[in-house]
Length: 335
Image 1 (tube, one colour):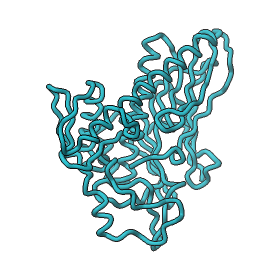
Image 2 (cartoon, rainbow, N blue to C red):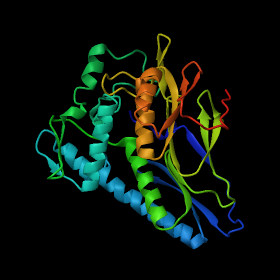
Image 3 (cartoon, one colour):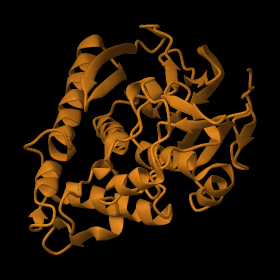
Image 4 (tube, one colour):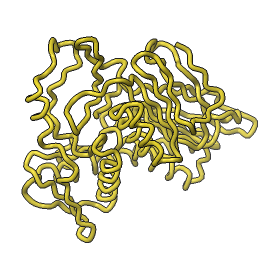
């Protein structure tokens, strides 16, 4: 389920026009946060205001990372994992509610997404070193500690308890989507009318460029990564893509993605790219990952539960599949 930076298929293009008729300026900064690349673009009245608000975004993402990172040993999530099978851990309400939503999403996808995937054994290698598939026994064993139903939440005490020793929760890219959404909300509250928060391809956008045009978000062609498959104009939206075009293995003619089904331990097959658009990046990220795992048919059925979200899928054999509510008129598939 983990999505590395290399497998974030979204690229956004921003016309770096610094001034327009209303004297707004655009400033962009790239930095490493939450274990990945963040591109922060802010449109403000002047450069100083833009830079100050970029600083505020970085501070907010850092705050969230220190709460939910499962690789920082002093985070609240790490404390939950360290006490798996021992005792419940009291966490901030923000962490509790994010975990609660992640469990609800795990239930909605019937385990296609699972917040406890962090306990999965890494038996699949996508660095070229694998020469044969793992055994069925090894695959089954790799997910023994995975299971969102073994997470106990106490809303009154605001505690999280993992029933099994060795269990772990981790938000991965879902956490990046959450962070981008939080920062967009914060910027809007501060009166910043336009920008993009891009967490390794999980993007929350709002407003327009200084020249009055919408933001243009490019989707990489999975069969030719140097080119764009499409460019989509967006204003207040979120967009995220999951894909396997850079990390996969092929055995017996079947392409196995680096995105693993946490319920079975087997990699996703059938789709090489899924892009989801909707109001927030947290949900869009969970959906794009889950649709990769569930496949075209089950994925489209799942998406019907989320009518505010739409998707664009690319199958392993190059077929373009759009949900019925995918209404980007200017989209043109080019392979």
